[in-house]
Amino acid sequence: MLRGFVDRLVVGDRRYVIQTEDKGPAKGQFAISVFEGGVLVHQRAVSYADLLELELADQDELIASAMRSTHNRVLKDLEEGSFPRWPQGQDK
Image 1 (cartoon, helix red, strand yellow):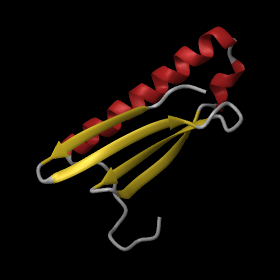
Image 2 (image 1 turned 60 degrees about the vertical axis):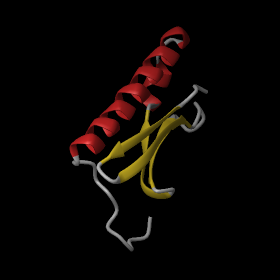
Image 3 (image 1 turned 90 degrees about the horizontal axis):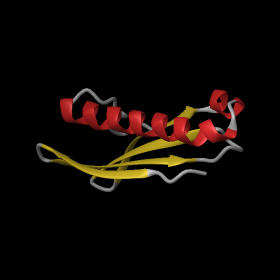
Image 4 (image 1 turned 120 degrees about the horizontal axis):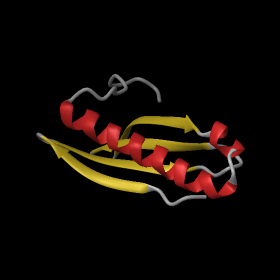
């Protein structure tokens, strides 16, 4: 299991925490959670099951790269105001 990433981001008057964490090879996915003001506003899981078929030496590097790339994309989308949010009051 790989270490994850946590970033704090302020966009205008909104304060976000973006967390990306590996769920481990048994699940073959990592999760990205976005919090605004301490409230979870978005969460998604990204599969990396296809990478588990590669040689062990390559797996960690490729999974970490996919995690970092996706994490950075979420940061950029938040900064640009184009990140999808759950509508207020919608169940998560």
